[in-house]
Length: 145
Image 1 (cartoon, helix red, strand yellow):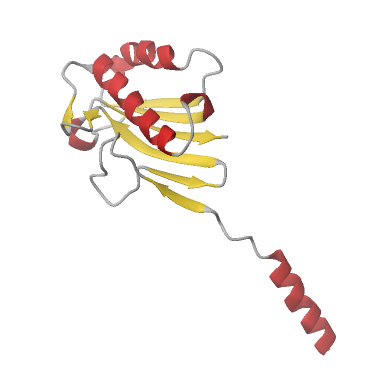
Image 2: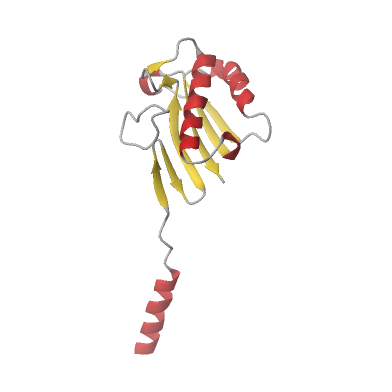
């Protein structure tokens, strides 16, 4: 009986998942977190970028203008986190777009499309009741190298 228990013990140890290579990504080129979250987390060759809003990291204020200007800034903020981890927009495989007003979809889509011209990532876009700091848009992405 003891050899079977020893075998099972070794087998279970061998089946354990390898340690996760997890790294917190932080950059001054994107807005600092306003709650307990990281700007990004890299696990192996995958990067998870937290939702970004249209805040200029140097002023900590929304960029002037409307949905188009905020969308540009959001994508610049996403790019900053990607670059801090050695990734690029071309590595983005999935994005989630949150809009405070679905009527802004067309204007957001025009700006978004100017950044993802070929092989755009899989995407969801939806209206939500409210966004942090009353932003017009928030985008979070997943990138893989």
